Length: 284
Ligand code: PDD
Image (cartoon, rainbow, N blue to C red; front, side):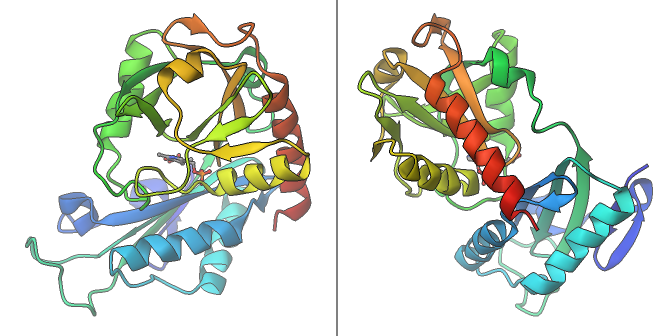
């Protein structure tokens, strides 16, 4: 059984308790981060904590603890669970208060929950076979740049993708792909140029995205940050996704149509390798 962390206490997962009046439960009034773990070490912890601070700031939510304390909790949880490979989920909510649409008083203590999830990250079958995605309308709220726990539409989109025999969904707004259900989306055009949507309120600023774009630039790959249409994606040479839990994974089919030759792309493969190498070097 896992050990989890709930508001200052490490305990067995079936003993972790949160109030029914927690604003995360009643209003999805909370944010989260997912930090991947390789060889028992945290990947890009500083990047995830910077995004957490931004999410909290956008929602006028107090920080549950400073970065040093959060790092100590992450490490303690890894040790207690002997986690070598997988992820740490950290949920922060506005805390417990009488049910009211108004934010509670500013001194309401935030709730802080962390748990681990074991899983293979380096050795993923999808890295060899590629993912099949289907497109669905992006019906999420208009502040997708904030990593809130309000994941219902992403969950619906992914479930619809599975129902249609695919692995994941790409979300589409005004004919253009925003991102995947839980990842950022990319294509490579006929000239080898990597295209991905620029940061805005429309997408989550992926921590893996930042790293992969930097590494791609260093590898001499041309990058164009602009929104692309579904038609462009269907005509692309390659497509792929990035996220903390998937690193870089190729997309080989969109809406039943093969992308390029229908096999994982060369640039996606290279970026996956470079990213993992860099992640192992810089993990803490
Ligand atoms: N998902 N876009 C969305 C909508 C996401 O939920 C995620 C992350 C990303 C990629 O961000 P990052 O590279 O920082 O993981 C993009 C995480 C992994 C999750 O909810 O499981």
